[in-house]
Image 1 (spheres, one colour):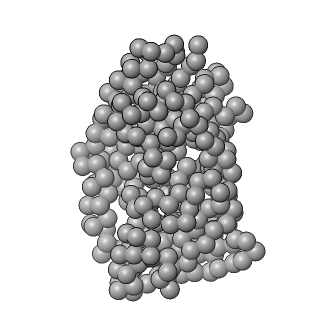
Image 2: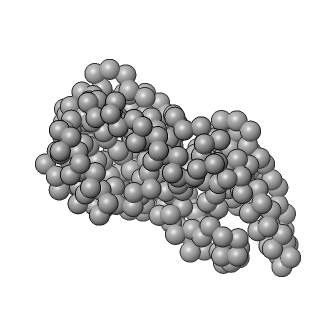
Length: 296
């Protein structure tokens, strides 16, 4: 008999995560002999520990049910384990960038069909110092927003909570800049940086084309850096983000590498998949085809 461990965040997606995952388990159990175990996270780090236990106890599959933060913790648990248990993601969070890239269905019926098909693909995972990320790390202006919005606000407003917070912070963020050194592919750049993003996929923060050339199976990271710019230039850049044309702006640097070292003149707190991460300096690398994940 197969064993599935479900790790879910009960506060995700307007608190619908619990209802969704139990409905899916009920449908699976009606036709298959699978043993389900359920673990509800209560605090930061719980999903990491639960994923480690699932790997060490020979579970056949871990189902992460929540947002990008839950996925990030589960992936860290898998990567910290000797045995890399397969992963499925049921998106139930506010943005779900990583699940969007993988075309994972959100509704109960289609996700149940996907589970029954058992179609897995090996994907890349990013590593930043000693931590792992599925989708993105970033630093600079606006990267504080994902962890500035409270869980209650996200539950009530969904993704619009981020947009409202961003609008409130625009006046105080436009003048920000950070002196940052980037080392990659035997090159070195020192840039007065407004914002930088290192991504594993093209979708970041709900913007589908932020890193337009990114692929999660190529063993490469996509690095996008916006220099300190005038309000006019920033408006042009942000408008271009909607269709991926921002990378052609002369204030934007965009390149690929399997490794990049980032150091700043002053310590800078980083965003890891929408959660507070390490501070600079940071060495970021891609681990090619590190885990197996359920995909359509």
